[in-house]
Image 1 (cartoon, rainbow, N blue to C red):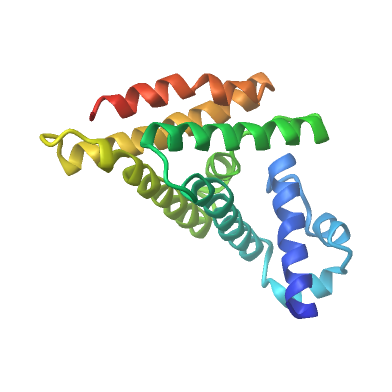
Image 2 (cartoon, rainbow, N blue to C red; image 1 turned 90 degrees about the vertical axis):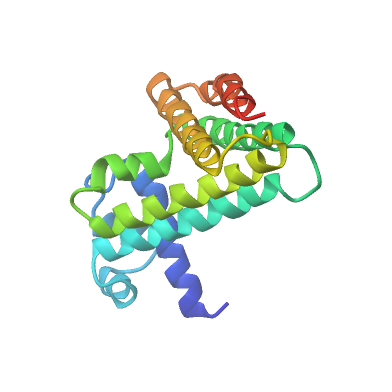
Length: 198
C-alpha cells in the first residue's frame, strides 16, 4: 500500500472511530485531522468534504463487517443454526472488547449513522441501505439450505430482513443499556425466526 493510500485509510479509520464513539455532527474536521495526524489541508486533498468522508466511512465499515463478521461465519462447512450463532457471538465479542477498551457500548455504526444522517446526507443513507441488503443476502444463505420445500422465496426474504432487524435491535439495546450481552440475549429470537421456515 502506498503512503498516500495509508494516509487516506488512516483518515477514514479515525473518522469512523470518532463518528461511532460520538456522532457525525459532534465531531469537527479539525478533530478528525488531528486524530489522523494530518492537517486539514491534507484531509481535503483526499476528501472533498466532511460528507464525502462520511460516505467513505460507511463503505469502509461495510467492508469490515462483511469480512470480519459474515464471511468469517461462512469460512468452514457448518450448519445454518451454527452459522447464525457464530454471527451473534462474533458481534458480541467485538462489542464486549470495545466496552472493555473504551468504557462505551456504542451500538451499531450503521443504525447510528442512519438515525443521524439518512435524511441530511442521502449518499450515506444509500450506503447503509446497501449494507443492510448485503447482510440480508448472507442470512438468505443461512435460510435456504434448511427451508422446508413448501416455503417461498418471499418468505425467505421476509425472514432475512427480520434477522437483520433483530440484530439491529439487539445492538440498539446494547447501547441503551450499555450492556453488550444484550446482543447474545437476542440470539434465541433469531433462532426462532429461522425455525419458522424449517
